[in-house]
Image (cartoon, rainbow, N blue to C red; front, side, top):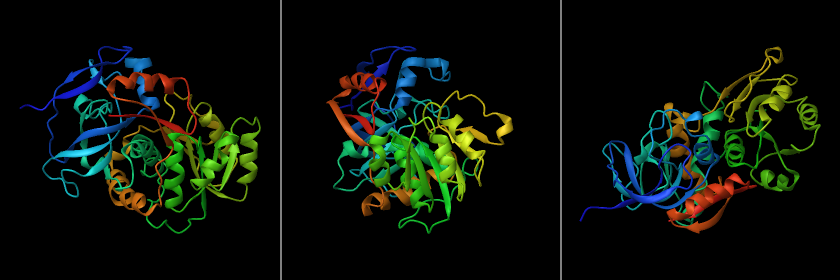
Amino acid sequence: MAQKNTAAWTTEVQANPLQVKESPYPSVGANELLVKNHAVAINPLEVALQDHGQHMFQWIKYPFIYGSDIAGEVVEVGSGVNGFKVGDRILALADASDPDCNNAAHAGFQTYTVVRADLATSIPSNMAYEKAAVLPLGLATAASGLFPKDFLGLQLPTVPAQPSTGKTLIVWGGSTSVGSNAIQLAVSAGYEVFTTCSSKNFDYVKNLGASQAFDYNDENVAEKLIEALKHKDVAGALAIGAGSLDNCSKILSKTKGSKFIADVNPRSPPVPEELGVTSKFVWGSDLKKCEVGPAVFGDYLTKALESGNFVAAPEPDVIGHGLEQLQKGIDTLRNGVSAKKIVITL
């Protein structure tokens, strides 16, 4: 009997709601895995895809399937794959919406998803799928901004953590999904982290490894960071959230060290030239274009999760079961969440 697949389809640009219906059963290729999904998470990317369609993602051809964060069980292993077998429990980045992929078979919002083996990680036996599903895109986006040579170019994380470099990284938006991962990755790579978030999340970001936290609702937050960093060698900044690029530009222009910002915000205004600061937009799967992808998903993350050196954060907020609940998940995220990740179990 032929295998069956089901997906939550976007039938045309900006279609709302998603439509759950049959989907082709995917074929696994070389260096790929086929995963039966047990949990998927919702990202701002999916909100942007539904709300803005081809205004921001002109390469996507509809009907299409969204979804970047998956956790599930390997059911097929493609040729050339080492380190994975049928039955393994993994988390993985589903890169369907990446312009270099643009293939609905690689999307997360379906029962079966094809993923690149170098963007997958085995998860500990005591970690629930819904917990693991919070990681892939936030982790990949953070790593894509921190480690590639054409971004911040930080040294790679290790288990145990690298010795201190004596440098301090600014993570603006530390309680976000990307920020939660960036803090942990940077600390494991040997960097001190100063971050911003709302005051209610200070303990949260410090538990992830940030040494200092600043309230981004404070109108003087940039000046306070500049003062706190006056004797520091700054490794640059990762800018997450509205207004973050402007604030990070002001801070780096008045501190010692790197003048580079990895910018997670699409369509940010250019940095004023007189500040002497440069920035570059981070696409969440940029790490797959270089050695950073396999270094983080393969060499680092499995060991870090198993040893407890890295935690799955933010916490999952499971709001439903089944593909039919994915539209509810997108709507919930659109309305705003804090230090949580919306997850649907399958």
